Amino acid sequence: MNKRHLLLNLAIALTLPALAPRGEAMDIPEKYHIGGFATGCQAYTFREFSALEAIERTAEAGGRIIEFYPGQRFSPEDGDLRWNHDASEEMIRRVEEHLEKHDVLAVNYGVVGIPRDEEEARKVFDFAARLGVRGITTASVDAIDTIEKLVRDYDIKVAYHNHPRRPGYDLWDPGFLADLLEGRDTRIGACADTGHWIRSGLDPVECLRILEGRIISLHLKDLAGPDSHDVILGTGMGNVAGVLEELRRQNFSGHLSVEYEHNWENSVPDVAQSIGFIRGYGAARGWGP
Image 1 (tube, one colour):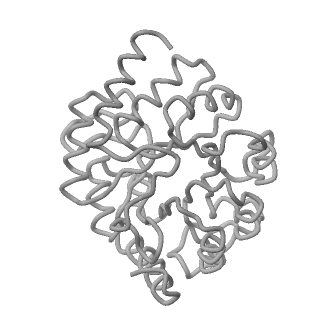
Image 2: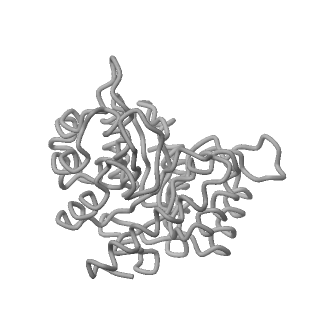
C-alpha cells in the first residue's frame, strides 16, 4: 500500500464511527428493518431520476435502506453531473445530508466493475469506505484475487450479482458462483437477483440453498413469467414468500433491495406495495413490524 492510500485509510478510519459501524459482524440497525429484514430499494429502480431523488422516492415508498449504483444523474439541478466513485467530497456531503433528512441508510454500492489492478480497484473501495456502506456489488470475476485482498484491507463485503443466462456468461448459475467462492474470504458472496434467476429458468429458493452462507444481499424481484416485466412482489411466480422463509432459515443478516424495473416514471406506488408485502408477511410470521 503506498503512502497516499495509507494516509487515506487512516483518515477514513478516524471518520468511520460517525458514518457507520465497520466489520464483518456489522449489523444493520433494527430501525431500518421491515418485516424482519433490512429493506429498501436499489436506486436503479429510479434510474429516470437523480440519486438525490432516488433517496426521496425510496423513503416515499416506505423503504429504509438504499443501494446506489454508478452513473446515475446526481441531482435535478446539476445537469450531467454523475454519482459514482469519482464523486467529490461536496457531492458525498450532500448525499449524506439527504440520507439523514429522509432517514434512509446507504448500505451498498454497485453493480460496479472492480479492476484487477489494485491501485484502480482501491478507488472503488475508498469511495465505499468514505460513504460508510457495508458492501460493494460487482460482476468482476477476473478480479477476485484483488477483491479478496481488498475485503481484508477495508473489511467491506463484496457480492457477485447475477444477470440472466446468455452465451459466454457464467454468473447466472449459482453453482458456478458457489465454486468460485469455495475457500475464499467469507466477506465475498452473492447479491441474489431473484428475477434474473427466473429469467434464467431457475428456482430462486433452490438457488438460495445452493449459495447458503454466502448471501450478502438480494435484488428482490417478482415476475409473471420468465419473459415478463417485473410485477409487484407476491403477485407473480417468484415465490417471494418462499424466498423470505428460506432467508430466515439461513439466519440471513443482509439486506433486501426491491429493484423494480417497470413503470419507470411512476413506480413509487408499486414499490410501496412490494415493500408492504415484506412488511405484512414478516409481521404475520412474527419476524418484526
